[in-house]
Length: 266
Ligand code: SF4
Image (cartoon, rainbow, N blue to C red):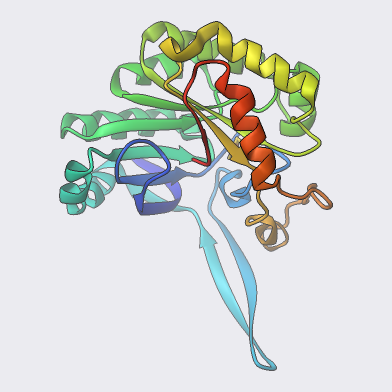
């Protein structure tokens, strides 16, 4: 079986414990305003043209986003990095896009990787078919779970989908007893008002460190902004600046009251 992938990164250290290989799967049912991997949204291969300038000369560079890999090829890549992965107690992380948008391929890959002794993590938006989620839980050691907004209307506005399924699926993972790290993207003006922060803190406190191994506060950044025009996608974050380090420190202290370990960044 093959899966559509737009990037495979080796030696990643922010997508779970140790040194990892992160597989970015293409296709996502959300369209978050701040997405820094817009080339991961469409579930088909795409190409774009980039103009590079050297002095007063311009060069057209063709870029391809999306290539099919078999689960066996993913395993071969892991096997080449086995020594680093084992020595650092790392593993493989399936990210995206939304990895559960290709559920059969994800399940097969998780099974194969875990069968060879690799620690497996899935980075998900949670907006996925509950049946598919249930099928991968036994083969997943860690979930990196995004919580973007707890207000249903604002979640719909900023991501294109409701948060109801996302919250229900998170509770199912909590019940399974699997390790969970929550990822909260901090987007100035969109989800960092005090009313929402308090709502988020009280939601997380309900589950606390017993259910949530870590809370990652992900500061909004602009590194993906140049990709939007290349892939013909509307960019809606003009005028929004990344949060300052002082603001992120303030938020770390704010969420530390939950008793959960809080970290800034992946
Ligand atoms: S869920 Fe993640 S990959 Fe999908 S649009 Fe949002 S930020 Fe991008």
